[in-house]
Image (cartoon, rainbow, N blue to C red; front, top):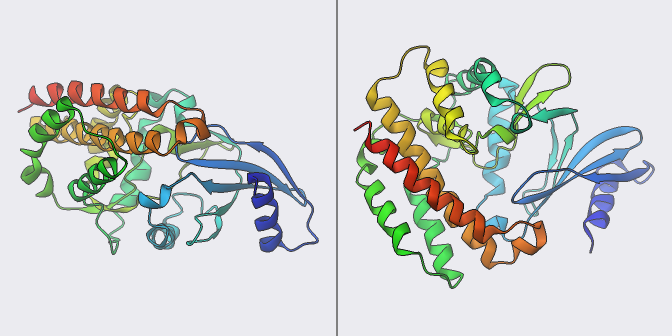
Length: 294
């Protein structure tokens, strides 16, 4: 069954067979999912189809609980209209705008900080911890199960990072987005800013979300940190930021390896072996930077 057929059938089931449905375009971006712009009776929707084997990384039941948990905060604009936890298909209202990855992320530090403070300071607590190091072990096991072997330089940087595990796990957690990179912030045409794609929501160190803002370029995480804190960061805080970014690079290295092994490079037209190699290079650079803050 083609993606267009899936979109048409699911949209018809959601809105009713009398509503005319047109699949207008596949939306740009996304390393895991395929997203489509849909016109249904003159209204615009976004329809998400998860990529192959994304269920090994994402628990849709947790995603649904997260969307319910954050709804009163209005952080994501409450765009989600329907989420099928069995398939991962999601229907959302479409809001015109640009992801911050297509703008100058440095121009939005204040607005991004406001969203993160609204989330981190809300006093909400999820049923699930993001549990970064347990997650990393799970992802490493998926790589091995895919028939791949971790390179020696991966194991070296991973083991050096693990020496800081007690420090990072000793931080009081709050509810976090856990993938708050620039591509997941949408600057709406009306000027508002929202944070979307809550597949990884869970309790974590709030600086993890700040570090995510440096996914494409760590300079943006460095620029965001003092704005988010409202003060000049201490050395220990810079250390945490760099360590979390090192961790994220190792995490996404494993995810990219699994995607390469399962054929997603061809499906999404993206060389995930190259992506994996890039994240490992970044991880080494980030740990070297972290070492300057010890």
